[in-house]
Length: 98
Image (cartoon, rainbow, N blue to C red; front, side, top):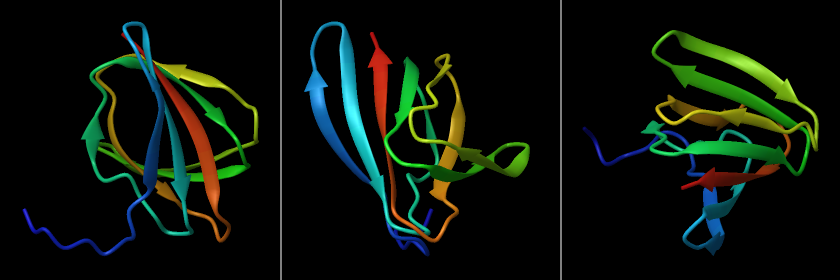
């Protein structure tokens, strides 16, 4: 796989990592992405801004507009790339439970 990326990377900032949870703030400029990854832990996402998610996974891609504060949860095993599909910066908090 190439080491070159067409998109700017999203910026993760770990806020807390202890025996129970890992809390990470993710900041995205327009067009930034996380890179494809598989979640090894279940997690909760708390959007801090309105988010124009573009989700790329094995089924293709889909847009998921999400309002600030609209919390959602996923189980471990999710495999995807998260992209800021909008024209404004976006951020969310990800809480992984161990």
